[in-house]
Image (cartoon, rainbow, N blue to C red; front, side, top):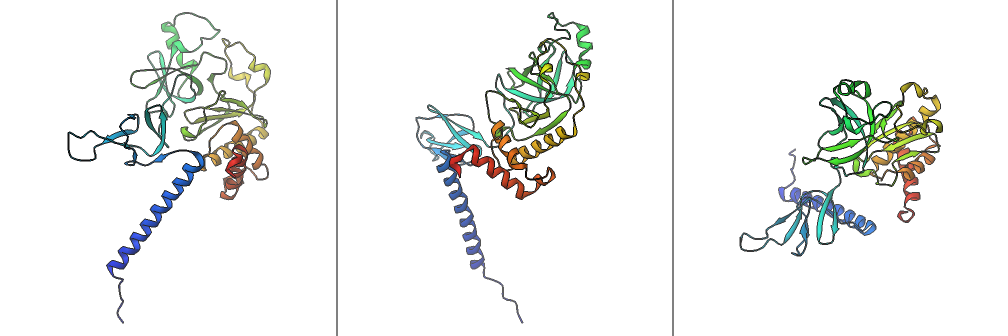
Amino acid sequence: MMDVEPSSSSSSSAMQSSSDYSSAAIAGAAELFIAANGRHIVCPGDTITTETSFMRGHGTYFQQQSKDENEQPAQLTAAYAGIVERVNKLLVVRPLRTRYSGEVGDVVVGRVTGLGGKRWKLDINARLDGILLLSSVNLPGGVLRRRSAEDELMMRDHLTEGDVISAEVQSLFSDGTLSLHTRSLKYGKLHYGSFMSVPSALIKRCKNHFHDLPCGVTMILGLNGYIWLSETRATAQMQLNPNDEIEETSFQITSINARSNIARIRNCINALASRHMPIYDSTVVYAYDASLEFDVKALLQPEAIDKITAHARALADPGAM
């Protein structure tokens, strides 16, 4: 008995119909998202507009429609997969997933990777390492003077490799490197907590990025996608003078209950990130409230993730349900 192979025409037609179906499904989903959120999503090579009155911004380029060199390019094309943003006549494509590109005043969380030359290098999830100059930190005792060679030799006593700090973007160098500073009470070295990372695009830009959650957990949301979770400190410790040096011995051992709450908040944030939801204090609290019916380790299951994220989405955006 001979096996009969399907004809090439039938197989090609099946592949074409499957391809058409997937393309139609993707296009339909994109149109539904645009209609619901009022956003224009593009893929690399998509035509944004053919109007010549718009200016080319980041993530876009002009593509000539014909080989005639005398003809002006009129087709503005997307170079990235992302969301089209318009500022007057300027069109920009903001990538959906990219390295952090900071702005002056941003709150970031970083890890020290090296030091030397009166500066520390920090991993801040950017294209280049962040720079924390010796002149941008407070000296022990709050002494205001020029940094000397002795201060440079004592740099490792202040911050060393592996330390996690919170800082603020002070300026940008010409090559895109971010210069940071910690000259404030709320910035500095972080102790006894949990460090985690999410895509920086998911962190919502808010007025305040330091939150004391009702469950007794302090959450620092860095705009670079790095997050720090720790037990909420006593009010008396928060009222220190910004120039005073905070010693490690002033921190108490984290209790078992606080560690459990930190792990729960961490799993809630990972759940929000897995469903591409914006991460800020409200969505984290909503997800935490919905997670109380589950054990901490059960929050890693897809069923629990779907339930808590749906609850957070319904409260954060009631019109979406």
